[in-house]
Amino acid sequence: MTEFGVCLGGTFNVLHDGHKLLLRTAFGMGEPVIIGLTSDRMAMEHRERVRNYADRYRTLRNYCLKVGRSFRIVELNDPYGPSVELPGLRHIVVSSGTKSTASEINRIRESNGLKALEITTVPLIAAADGLPISSTRILSGECDRHGNILRVLNIGIGSENSSKVSGVRDAFRLYRTEFRRVSFHCKSTESGVPEQPVGDEIARGAISRAREALRGNDLGVGIEAGLIDGLLPGTRFDVQFCAIADRSGRFTYGQGIGFSYPPIVLERMEREGRTVGDIVSDISGLRNVGSGIGAVGFLSKRRLTRRQITRDAVIAALIPRLNRELYLERT
Image (cartoon, rainbow, N blue to C red; front, side):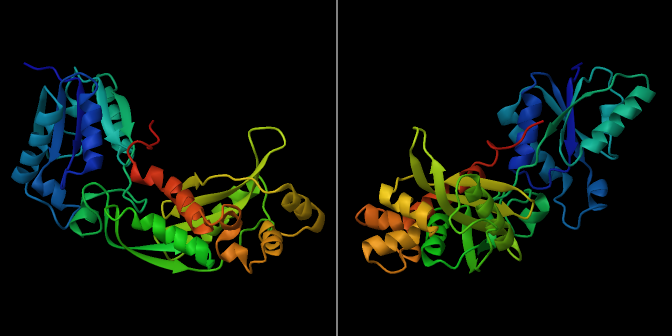
């Protein structure tokens, strides 16, 4: 008779990437796994739409055959199942949303004279909008099994600057699988930092704008440009910094390329207290450089524009959202 060393359980209503991570974690422990699958009766107590047990069993078993070796699936008619009875169990794998159940299982095991299980908590995988993937969201048509958003995703942009707005749009439109239908909402926001930010003021400004842009939207995008010290002594670079906020409270960050200004620009900025954009407008003879091609457009002979470097900063901030499982905070 097989002695199981690892247990986990769930409804597995629609098998999605979060479930698969849970199962791979359990099989990765190298011991036989026992999996509790919620009965139809128990599942219907908390859900309106539940696939029948036979269908859920078949889907779960087929996936387990691909990723595991020794396992058994048993029907769960209560929250604990065999986890409170099997003496050979050593580990329980749970999602961050069900850790309290594992603690209750250990309390019951110890009251029965059995050893407590080592709890491994697997974080929930977020969909592209930052909220967890769930069977409920999949069945309602909000997202697919991989967390790609199927409904219209409302993206707030914390700026009305045309170069920044266009750069944000360009970045999201590169990822039409993850963000299939998007609606952009632009508004003027306060950065809370000086008009010409320096150093960590740049990130603080972008975060403030992203937080304000998030209101009433699924994602909020904040862009701030400013000067940072370079890797070599005496060098300073202009960078675009992007912060993207979601409704879970998570922020992701990205930074575009850095380029240096002519010494005269930096000298006048220090002496006159004006922004780099205003000074470059004076030197170039171009009006409103900051809302057009940007200083980088003038200095690069239009090979680069502010719109392009904004796009690149946004792409960099999207990277953790495009690779959500890789960027999970594991416990």
